Figure 1 (tube, chains in turn red, blue):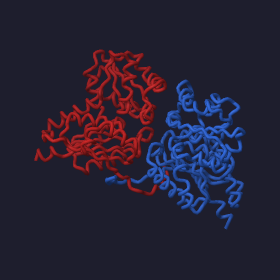
Figure 2 (figure 1 turned 90 degrees about the vertical axis):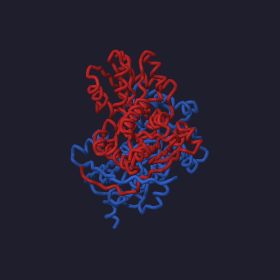
Figure 3 (figure 1 turned 90 degrees about the horizontal axis):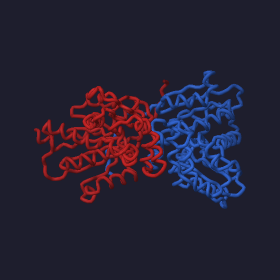
Figure 4 (figure 1 turned 120 degrees about the vertical axis):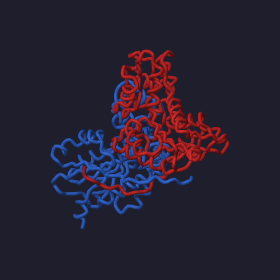
Amino acid sequence: MIAERASQPLAVFDSGLGGLTVAAEIRRRLPSENLLFLADRARVPYASQSVALIARWAAECFDFLLAHDPKAVVIACNTVSSVYLTELAEQTPVPVIGVIMPTAHAAVEATRSGRIGVVATKATVKRRAYDMAFAELRPDVHVVSSAAPLLVPLVEEGWTAGEIPRKVVEHYLEPIVSSQVDTLVLGCTHYEYFVPIMQDLLGAQVRVINTPLATSLELERVLAHDSELNRDRRRGTVTVYSTDVNEALERVVKDLFAEDLSEGRITVQSAQIPPFRIAPRRV
Amino acid sequence: MIAERASQPLAVFDSGLGGLTVAAEIRRRLPSENLLFLADRARVPYASQSVALIARWAAECFDFLLAHDPKAVVIACNTVSSVYLTELAEQTPVPVIGVIMPTAHAAVEATRSGRIGVVATKATVKRRAYDMAFAELRPDVHVVSSAAPLLVPLVEEGWTAGEIPRKVVEHYLEPIVSSQVDTLVLGCTHYEYFVPIMQDLLGAQVRVINTPLATSLELERVLAHDSELNRDRRRGTVTVYSTDVNEALERVVKDLFAEDLSEGRITVQSAQIPPFRIAPRRV
């Protein structure tokens, strides 16, 4: 029975392409596992939409992944983790791992001064997702949060270096820099691209937490605990689904999964949103 | 027969909220008309998605509006106008008016030097939508285009003044400023918010074309030609539908339709995207 479950895939979900950094880290650490990734690229970003709509879209994506009978699901999206993770986890028969708790845990272990900065999307800051995680793990932590909504479109445009991105990052980090934190959490997987600028602005003494690594370690711990790690010595397969297959997706897959691509172990597939009629309803 | 059609509503569509500036201008010029507006706010922006997906979404929104039997439809979205207007117009029994042709027409009338700048979204620049419009209207026009993808998220964040927005606009306008145009076309309804910065960077001698006005005048011309202007002396109603009703929508409606709101002539309604299953298919 256990061996059978062990060969089931691991499912990873993100609204966009940032979560592929988490999938790539899982791939590095657990190469025997079969990975499924779903990017809801058609509807990215889940940023200014209402919470009810974000929750519904996440549920639709989640149903798609559960239909593949995974042994665990990773929500590699801070916005969905902050809005909807508890409800999703309660309705799901397999472990559901978000990015927020593993990242907060790593931050608490890294900090000496107890002063932690969080740079995140508006939805994540507004929902106080990291504040609540820290309150649970170590209530005396002092958190300084800053919403940085423009960083996602900068990444989507591939504009991650130069004067303007540096000025934008500086603007968003200002309250964090002036609060003398010793640890920084990136509350959005897109922000990984700005680590060089951030490290430069904050100084080398500030530790920037690696969310893909922290999340992968938590997944590994959960699978080991349930004796569900795949012990097969062959490399597993990777299947990337997207609700819209386009150039940006193909470029990121090429960057992050070069080896799997050259060895034919990765496939990119369309996960289609069916046509439908839009219906009016008075609010 | 004609009088019956005249009382039918005018339908206006945009992926987001920028198109409400066009609807507001139509309202000012044609106050007797009944207006329907649909914002596909759930899926805005239609920016980095594939052309096939943009076309499908536009068709879904279009079907929704046609179900209300309008006497004309205005596509107040440059991206949809550039990707899909011809096909939509061919399938539709009533006049379909985009923003590109009326704006290009106004630019050709305004220019003296024949040098026109176009700042637009990536999709619109890539599809060469304005180049083709100018080629049709006046082939000797020299067009200088610049894609300005970050301006939409800046507007969505309400960040339209100050050092960083100015630097971003300056960056995008640089090729246009150095080409000494005498006329500027804003190829995205969101960009209206940056007119003060743009006018300042370009100098007062450069004419910035007013897309909402040019589009409204074209609509008026078409309706008058078909004898379908509503001659009723009472003010018509405005119904704003959105696929996601949220704070941003309500704020913009309040700003642009203050009078109608205070007089109870405007309603905001949800146009629901039904729940569905996402289906895999190999590409």
